[in-house]
Length: 425
Ligand code: FES
Ligand SMILES: [Fe+2]
Image (cartoon, rainbow, N blue to C red):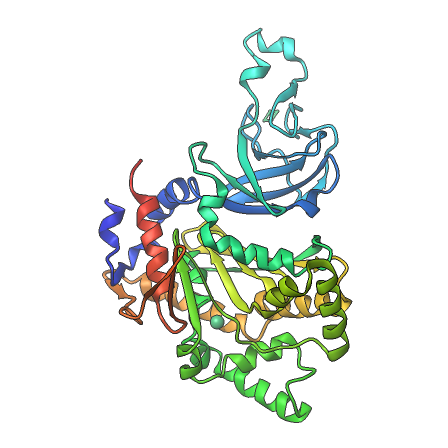
């Protein structure tokens, strides 16, 4: 099978969403080659602190080492292959010990100790049996890992889209962020790519989310203004904006597979918070930079193939492929250290609306992902067009392409990256 034959400039073959063999190839060639967002510095603040995450279907442990650096290893014991760590986060100041026969691994994977080592008949070299290290690079406190030792630097992978991470960090009036110690997650029975193709699709909300648009309009009428509406209600109202509004909104795409669309939820902080927050940002950045930070309004940034970012609501979501037909989406929310508490409360409300399975918005999307799995699972389902906005792309310099937010350019951009990754080495 030649993966490149499944993608054209205008169509993609349905099997890319449903074929288990293609999924395994994606794990090897896409998730085995790209930089994958893993964790934020604040989650492993002290030596010995660790979190467990995934690169594709491979579990990894990210640990703060004794020298203060972050280290990552594959979450697998080199003896019989058991996963080393079953917890999501914790402290392992003396290393990660396998629960099966007690082999002990350092943060960087070095095999430090094997109980009853003399029983291995002298054919066990500690130096040759370390856990597999995972290459890490950090961008402004955000740790990305790759299983590809030959991958180019992280900044090349991020390209101009690094500015969306800048957008998040620069919103802190101290330059510091901390990841809240709780997460909101959901699973759906469908392919991981469906999330990437849905989140910046501005045509679907008016249809898929119509019911919650009606509810939100009732709420807004009762409240009498947009002020004081929660971000979830703001999101629901934004979903009901006319198509021309989204036609006039920008979408920006950049290789490999990344994109964002302009902000459109129009939610504001309360006047007191806005004043104090603005003053704090001016004190930290100076007036010009503060104005630029506050004037930036991006909706979701998609860092293909593994994470989505919303700086204005301090939210990062990891899209984790589990099987060809099973995906987990994990939402993390960040506190802007030193900013008014309302900025954090707003972010929590946003991630509730954006990532809770109980959200009146997300439940619609999950229903549709399952319908996509069913419809695209039919034998001979055939080719899927993605031609919306095909001729509207404009070069915008610096690696960007600008196009209306109603375009499917971001999906075409994702499949250009998909085909590139999937080419044999
Ligand atoms: S499988 Fe880990 S020590 Fe045996
Ligand atoms: Fe949606």
